[in-house]
Image (cartoon, rainbow, N blue to C red):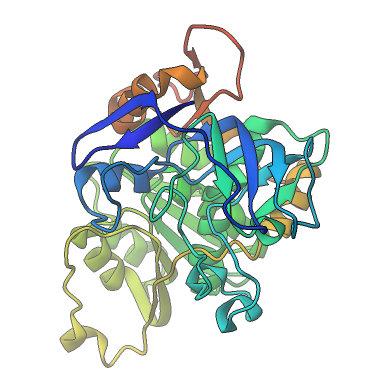
Length: 362
């Protein structure tokens, strides 16, 4: 089969690799029908995730059809259309019993495209299939469903739930990429007073408005001053860091009010300074976290009911074989206007499909 293989920092290739086989009785083999690229994949290619070894197939998000299952798999069978979660859960360890699947001690957690071969391929082996794939309702579009493999659970769990968004809150989301947009969309479920989106790209700020942001702050503006002005100098109740660079994290800690929450979602490849000399007296709660995907069944119900703007997240679609071209478009999001690119799940043709977003058509 063909797959996108990591060969070290800055090096990857769409090439032939062996088809995956059932290795454990809890495994399933899924034929990939729709797959997407995550910002974490870009971090891997930059060398920010050294645990990923050369030769690993990348990717941790997919929708597909089960083609084979091990003898212990009970919840899905060949022919089922499923969502492949970015998180694998053994279901037996302490953390899985608490619903903290991202911290699984039994060989799960974030393993696809990390410590084992991932989903950016024609087929993928999914360990612990009973708890790691989700059957999809017939009416759910593959392009939309794949947004629930990682992006929406991450924005919701690590951003909104960890940040403890409440009715009437002022919420600032720093970074209006896919995860930041998912945080904006799901924060709206809790009826905040206002949501402020901060980003440098005009196309992403336009997207933030469509996802529910009330105020947007772009290049050349001072987000800290704007938040102070809107809150009478108090600061935001919740600040979601969805960029993953030291400067944005440190800005988030300056924007939050005393007693507020900073929810770090971004993947950081460099150290960030924690200014405890300023924060110790403010009763600020700072959370970090890898998504658990415990919310996936709830989000799937909401998607099926038309309550999540997942379709708006997909800006570009490609045939599966154009993986390298898709990476180029996604990596240059500031130029291309890309939010999420989907491969294989869109129109079956040889040309890239681009959905226009924003006033500039990006």
